[in-house]
Amino acid sequence: MVGIPSFNNAKTIEYVIRQAADGLEENFPNMKSVIIVSDGNSEDGTREVAESVSLPQKICKLVTTYSGVPGKGSAVKLILQLAERLNCKALALVDADLRSITQEWIRLLLQPIFEGVKFVAPRYMRYKYDGTITNQVAYPFTLALFGYRIRQPIGGDFGLSRDLVNLLLGTPLWKTEYVPRFGIDITITCTALAYSMNVGEAFLGVKVHDVRDPASHLGPMFKQVAGALFDNAYLYKSVWQNIMHVKEPKIFRGRIFESKPKPFKVNLKSMEDEFAKGFIERKSLFESILSEQAFTLLRRCVEESRIGVEDWAKISFNFLKSYQVYSKEDVLDAYKICWLGRVSTFVKETLYMSDEEAEEKINGEALTFMKFKPYLLSIIS
Image 1 (spheres, helix red, strand yellow):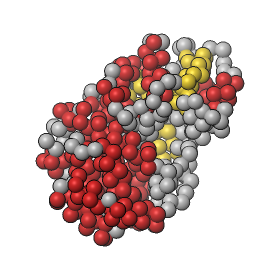
Image 2 (cartoon, rainbow, N blue to C red):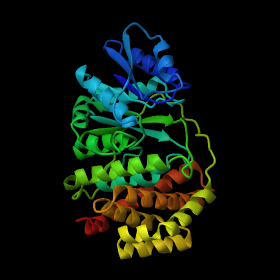
Image 3 (cartoon, rainbow, N blue to C red):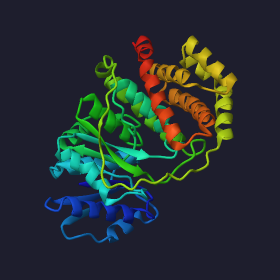
Image 4 (cartoon, rainbow, N blue to C red):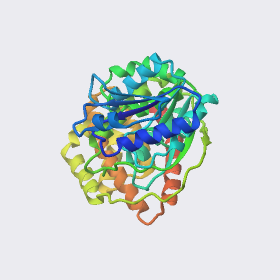
């Protein structure tokens, strides 16, 4: 099965469906295949476009609208339920806004499942300022907690086994606020790692999709991803407390054309201003939810207009601690302000770096989170 959660993707949905169909027909010709489009009541004709796409006779297609909380997680939940009902052996999830997906993506996401891998995450080539939530939060946190270097834990394009589908359908985190929305991707990754599943990564080349500037478009998504990440961290606390070593997943490669990702502009000044202004305006909130030591550290970072990676690890771990005690919305609002300060610091540090040099820096900084895991354990009760 290929599942495509969609919302207002009329411009790209046909291309994604056709590539998925070509991938299934080319690589799994002797298996029953189905493509599911799980739509969130799109207002731009996405469903109509999806329904009009003709597919090879062997491949079934279902275009449906999910019910429940509006969000990607609810769309994915319906796909998971259909996968279980159809006794699906392997499920690929792909985003509906992709412009770079090829039929080879489908093979790379699904074939490892038939070889005993339980979860396949994507590995992309990305512009250095694409994926700021991934680079500064999801990736380093996932590495620190579970010890696995999953480079794109919220990449959106995954391969799932039947076992993982069943675990996800049974998770209590569906009842939380963030998993039915953009918190689903980090939940898929954390669930696979928490249950010590055999995991791999599929190298998919450049990801071309709808990009967003962190200063103006990513606020709600940040809170949903970080909130779901923190919910997963507390749910699986007994699992990750004793993990202190880093493991590398097996990387699956195929016929992927390697090209350079296209750069785009980010608003550095806006991020710096929101960081400084947000701290001043909500100073009492920061003071109430952070320990005295953490608040002092953050105040120094604001004065210097810089959050170095070691300070960022400590600040991030303190927000995880606060999440258990204080209003989740307040904690995530404050953490989002700090994230903008961290992203602006990274942008300034990498202005003259190539994508490859910036990638090396991101990988090294993720290991810093693992380096400070004893600090995390010392503050989390």
